[in-house]
Amino acid sequence: MRIDLISIFPEFFDVLDLSLIGKAQREGRLAVHRHQLRDFSFDKHRSVDGTPTGGGAGMVMKPEPWALALEHVLTQAQPPAQAQSPGSEGRPTLIIPTPAGEVLTQHTAQQLARTEHLVFAPGRFEGIDQRLLDWAPQHFDVRPMSIGDYVLNGGESAVVVMVEAITRLIPGVLGNPESLAEESHAHGLLEYPVYTKPARWRGLDVPEILLSGDHAKIAAWRAQQQDVRTRKLRPDLWAKHVVAQEKNLT
Ligand code: 6GU
Image 1: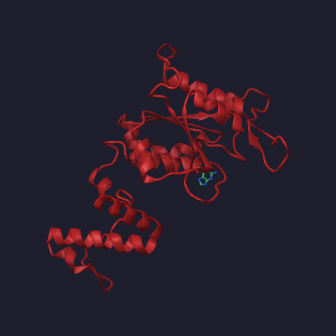
Image 2: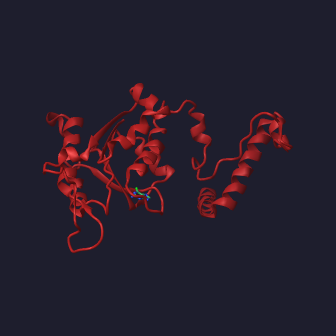
Image 3: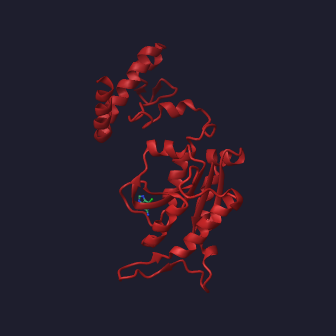
């Protein structure tokens, strides 16, 4: 997978060189390219923002530096000779982080993990001029995306979250692929509680069933714990799960 990150703070993404995502890059499963948005602004101050037309607070990002940066990414990623026509398969996906976007879910992350090329365009200030979003579908599958119902100062930290959620699902990135099947949200439920040695710690015991060696009973207990936890902590997920189960039975 190729990932391009365009920002006025490209250093923000240095954390992606750490841990499993850094390892995936070194192993060639993933190529992350960072771009300084200001390199595509050519006025004296390399400015990327302007006052909102029509008035109002804050600043709005100009569309032209973004368009030039995105065109640069397109030419880097696909030599012009092989350029694909608009509407064809294999267009890169352009993710625009915004609290006004579709909220990222495990399902979306799984879908995005199967794409060849992701481009992230995190804005700062009050956001990017709407015309950039109106122009971009000529070249990209555009997806405005949020990571939850709260507001961040800029999209960069949301990009780090999204890249981590997506890239860990690429085959070979995670050490133990079995953890993917069992973790929270993989099947619409929260994960069961986990324990390690010692069996008794500060007067607290590991549930006895986990020491029984009876794998069927342990699996049943864990499934029941997932139900209990999800019902209690995430009634919204539980309601969806119940509906999905009813559909499967009929
Ligand atoms: Cl993607 N960006 C910003 N600025 N705030 C957010 C967000 C994104 N997702 C939740 N809040």
